Each structure stands twice: as C-alpha cells, then as structure tokens.
Amino acid sequence: MKGLTLFGRSLISILGGVLLGLAFPPFGWFFLAPLGIAVLTAAWWRAPIGHALLAGYFGGLAFNGILLLWIRVLGWDAWIVLVAVWSLWWLLLAAGSAAATWWQWWPVGIAGIWVLVEAVRGRFPFGGFPWGRVAFSQPDTTFTPWASITGSAGVTALVALVGALLLLVARLVTERRWLPVGGVAVLAALITVSGAAITLPAAGQGAAPTVQLAVIQGSVPRTGLDAMAQQRAVLNNHVTQTLTLAAQVAAGQAPQPAAVIWPENSSDVDPYIDLDARASIDAAAAAIKAPILVGAVIAAGNDPNRLWNVGIVWEPGTGPTDMYIKRHPVPFGEYVPARSILTAVISRFDRVPKDFVGGDEAGVLQLGPARIGDVICFEIAYDAVVRDATIGGAQMLVVQTNNATYAGTGQPEQQLAISRLRAVEHGRSVVVAATSGISAAVAPDGLMLGQLPEMLPGSLSVVVPQREQLTIADQVGWLPEIALAMLGVLWWAMGVVSRRTGTNV
Image (cartoon, rainbow, N blue to C red; front, side):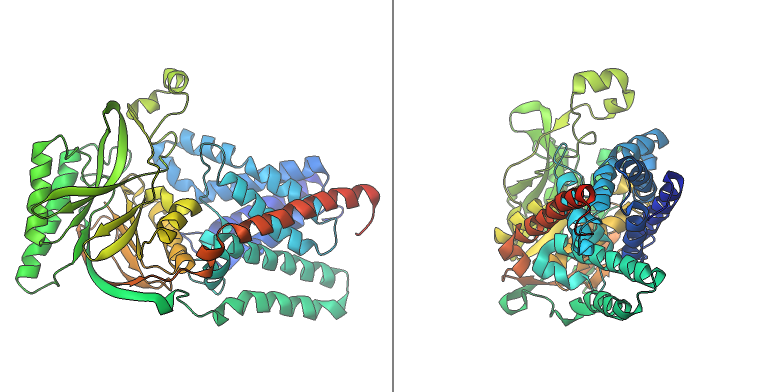
C-alpha cells in the first residue's frame, strides 16, 4: 500500500501467501483464501514494478512452499527447485495486480488477474500444472456451487473478488470513508453466500440409473519413493482384496457389485505380456463376477521403449477389452524432457528409464452398466481432460490414482478436494480408486458417499448415481474463463495507462 517499503511489501506478501496456502488441504482452512488474497493485494497495491515482482515472488515462495510440501518425499532439493520455479508465475500475478489497482473498480480487475494467471500456468510449460488453483481450496463451501455454472475459473474469480472487496473495506475504514463501507461489506457478504441459492446437482433432471460399485484399495508394501518397487506384490494385494470381497459377497456380507474399480498402477506388470499377471486378474474378475477397471502400465503399441499408463476394462471370462490411455503424462515423473541432457547431470531421472506417451482420446468407457469417464491421477486437475470425458458421454467420473509415493503428506487430501469440486462442476459422481488411499466416492453435489483411510487395505462398496444432463459449466465450456481472463488483461492494460497518465484513479 502507499508508503510501504520493499521490505514491508515482502513481509505482507509472505503473510498473504501463507494464509492462502493454509486454505488448502491438509489444513483446509478454506475461509483463509479470500483473506489471503486481500493481504496479497495489499502488499502489491500500486507498487513500483520492481517492488511488485520481488514481493510477489516471496509471496509465491510462501504459498507454494506450503502447498507443495508433499514433494519433499522426492528430496528436499526437488521441493526447493519446484517451489522456486513455480513461484515465478507469481511475478505475473503481482505485476498484474499492482497495475490493476490503478484503475477504477479495481476489485474486478484483481479477480480477472487471478483467473488469467491460473489459465496460463495451467497450460504452460509442458502442458501446465494447475495444482493450487484458488478454486481447489473450496471443495465444500458456499462458493462451490458456482462451479456448476462458471466452472472452476468462476470459483477462483469469486473468491478473489471477495478478497479484493475485503481490502477495499479496510482501505475505506482507514480513510474514514464511512458511507460506502457498509455497502461494500454487504456486497462481499452477498457474493460469499450467493452460491447457497444454486440448486445442486445441476444435472439432476437427467438422472440415469444408479450402479453398485466396489473400489479396491490394495495398498503397497512400502510408501515413499520406492512405493512401487515390488510390482508383483502390489498386483497381488489388489487381487487378494478382490477375492476377499468376492467371498464376502458369496456369504451375503457385502452387495454384489456391478463393476469393480482398481487404482492406477494396480498392475505395473504388463498383463498383455505377463501370463501370470493376466491369470491373476482373470481369476479376480471371475471370482467377483463383474468387470474390473484395471490400472496398468503397458508397452506403448509396438514400441518397447515407451509406455502407456492405462485403465483397462477387464471382463470376466473374456479378459481385456476397451482401454483409456492417460492423455497427460507427468513431466519429469512419467517422462523426462530433454532426456539426454538432464539424465547426464541428474541421476534421479534414472528412476524414469522409459518415457510414457499420452493418448489422444477422452476416457469414456463402458464398465458393466456404468458409462464412466476415466481420468488418471493428476489429470483430475486439468479442465480439458475432465470436461472432454463428461461431454463425451460419461455418466460418472472415475479417478484412478497412485498416491503411494505421497502417502501421509497431504497430497491425497488435495487431490480428493479437487475431485469434490469436479463432481459439482460437471454434475457427476466421482469415484476415486487409490492404491494406498484416499479411495472415495463423491456424489454429484460434492458430498462424500464413503471413503477408505490411507494405507488400510480394503474395499469400498457404494451405490453411485449416474447422470446424463450437462451442467451449464459444461455447456458453456471455456467462455467464463476466457471472459474473466480478458477482464484481467483489460484491467492490467488500463492500470498501466492510468498510472502513467494519472487518470481514473
């Protein structure tokens, strides 16, 4: 704010970054998100460009340091590098916010700036990394229902707008301008609670039949970086839990599932090549008398040097039929960009000896009576992957994930929060199958239908509603995000002009 030194702006920006980071799981203090944005905007208010950039970077370090703390299991050096690099996006966030505050109705500009920067960093580089979008801190709040109309971008915008209005209230009080204080405060309150007036699920009138599902959480021999080192043991764990469930069904202790969902990497042993793996999965499907969605790693077509991360529909008595190939492999985790250079200097990349390649089709699969949209692990954070599955005909969403590396770190909770927001955004039930947890089922209104705790092997039997009607968010697609991002561009540009000319301040 006016008169602040670079040191003061940096301290306030760090505080804002901490507050915003604490809004996300595993802390989940969602109410801090608007407050964090208010504090950040105060730090960047009409700051000289150099001050804005430095203060913004410090705020980004604070935020990403908390949000991405789970990366530490790969090594503290990996955490430091990722936080340092990903905080560079906050240079744009701070510069844009500092400029926007020079123009009239600047709270609108702040909302647009947040959407703009999130839109860009969610796509670039290497396909982007949308983890940490403000909307993902709001899985079960009064902001959440807006996702069914405006998409995740609209939720981010509303949270940022309320944060900016909170700062405006503080400024009006400081300036003793009492008359408008009440009006701005009421406006912020109305925006905050407005989502409660939206009826969920938005796709409610196009209901398809419910389906009885079972989710298998086989767990892993160990967690951390070597969680999947014993591939055969992981497969056996999921087979064993499926056979246990089949025995419970036969004894009348559990309902007969119409379909069974295994997590990502439940068979890292290629069942198309390994006859023992194929026989084990065949036996599990025959025992449970239902198709199984198997998460597997297989050779990419005829190329033995590249891999696919897939979800395979495995029918009892028939074996593998349809499959979904993960569209968005994780850079540096599932493939190494500039491999020849990086592997020569960073030995850790030897753990990724082969590159995964992505598929090009939406994950719409028929799994018994369920028409599912399969997404794999981090793909749940990518708008296009989830939306394509929904508009492609999926009546429910499935997230196959392997969080064993990050068990107990907060990453599984963050992923589940994203899944809950996606349920509301697309008006679809979301079923999460995780090797080590958190496996869960989410209703189309975002409420939890059931879940399994981390690192506890078992199964989750749940009746899941299917839905056919598209939400408004699905029908309008990218339009809200584009419109809001353009507002950010407009306020950024006009703020620069206003600062130089001294007009519209």
